[in-house]
Image 1 (cartoon, rainbow, N blue to C red):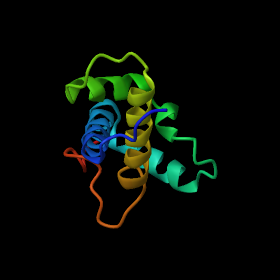
Image 2 (cartoon, rainbow, N blue to C red):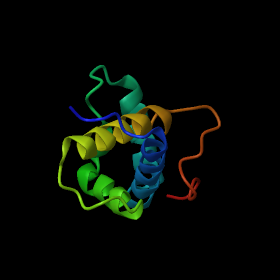
Image 3 (cartoon, one colour):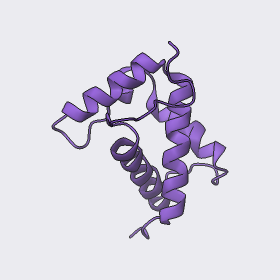
Image 4 (spheres, rainbow, N blue to C red):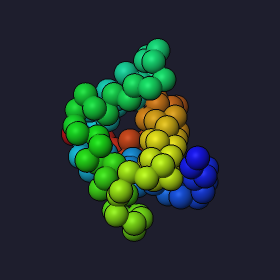
Length: 107
């Protein structure tokens, strides 16, 4: 059984994933992802996949964080999934006063 991922690794990967998405998607697309996620009933669905290959974006974030090469071990998958869930719940939901990345306000 896989050990629970380190919370700091989860937070770092979640934020790196968000910034990688911000680089990949337009602000309008990122806003739409947030709106769709907010209205999604299935907790296993993330609407980043509607606009890009979000697994490739997560892989980029993984590499940016300097984690070991992906081998899809139980530990790596637990970290990947926990970070995705955190990003979805903390960064990919509409929020009052929320800016959609460093380029907010640009198309």
